[in-house]
Length: 111
Length: 112
Image 1 (cartoon, each protein chain N blue to C red):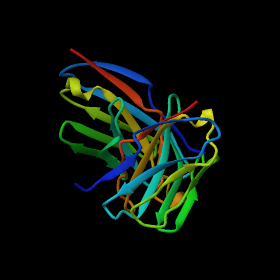
Image 2: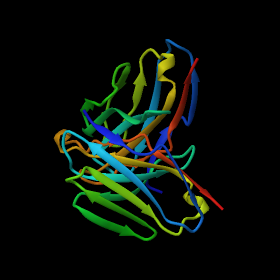
Image 3: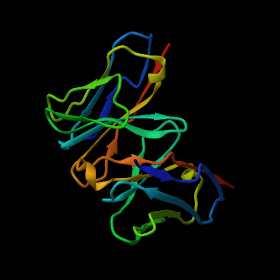
């Protein structure tokens, strides 16, 4: 079944560690997005990508790195995790001027 | 900056009608989206407005007034399964990248 999948679904790590969240979509959508969702803030855009090898910062990019070597994959890396990055992370994809479709999310806890 | 406001919580009775409002002040405008999000799940797309007026989709309708920076989501014949958060999101045209800015969401509780 075509769709967008995120892995892992749950992750616990320690401050200072590097962690990578994976996102894979089978729709061949041009655009991909990473959001974090925190109580009181709603969904906030971290990074987005308009196509392979094209990425740009969103509202809250500090402490995160992304890459997009293939259209279908858009991994998000926390290079040195901090407690403030404890959150639920959602990946989404869309074509231009179309609704974004979200993955099931990754619940990340940083101790 | 982008500012999107919606009520934090609402409660309504099964079978009734509820209206969830959203007001926005953004650097540009190229569409307004409504998403539904059940607790612990991903947001799912409900509706989209880019022109003024009402868009109807089954029990759900969404209205937009661009001059007032205002939208609402109307849910009819409420069912228990409609208990969820409803997210209003605006696509400002300046970004040119299909980006959305979200409100903090309205948590709707449907009671018997």
